[in-house]
Image 1 (cartoon, rainbow, N blue to C red):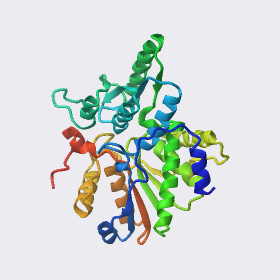
Image 2 (image 1 turned 120 degrees about the vertical axis):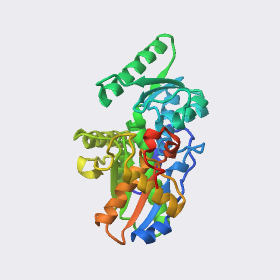
Image 3 (image 1 turned 180 degrees about the vertical axis):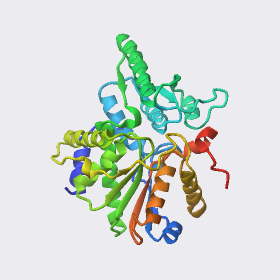
Image 4 (image 1 turned 30 degrees about the vertical axis):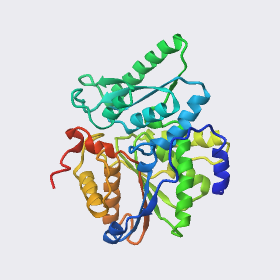
Length: 350
């Protein structure tokens, strides 16, 4: 399918005007020379109305557009206390006249007397924030489920009072949100064509799976000959790709097209997120320092630092071969550089 045809399908969907597109796309010349590949970066961190944009803005354009069409007053969403998605949702709600309510899990417990990073921004923006502390012995999945349960009980009370509420899942990973990165892939493909450069790889960080599903669905629609390498930032089980394929397929179905995804359309690597979500790794911190000192650009220790570290390792091992052309999708999150020291680790040690 041609990109113009895909864009016509996307224009049929309700959409809030939240981002500034196309986002910048250019070569990292110093690192390209050092690494022996042609390395470009797409700056999704420049997508939002504030300094703190990222990949969630593309999703939120469709999610907030849909919520407003439904007549929503309140938007509920979830994440960790330093969630980029949660903060960007609050930004979007403030612009569009909606009331944001956050249920955030404290994987790293914040100090209420020294709020930092995204949680600080949430409070400045005036969001209603509920911080959920983990109980002893409670798994991440269990505390996430408890957070959602508490939020839905809250929504039920508001609905009983006559208010209209809309729930946005963690990371905006829904069929509607995923549509944003079908849109994003079309934009990327057009920018790549304008460079007269055939790219071999697109590299990005994946968490809840919505960005990955949208990129892969966009690639499928355009029949674009490029491998998408998705580096996990949280542990995922065997159901992850099945769920991501289902997510992408629902987005494609809602656009009214026949193409469908299978797990074979995805390439993800779960070997670079350790020691865990919002827990720093030496390799990610090395990657952050490398990009900062070679190109003057910032990654973050939770998402983009770990994905960039995975890409570097692939290049050094020859999995991404010399003379390849690579795009790194900078999905934002540099606010984490101002988060709690537990998230930063040894970033300043060398």
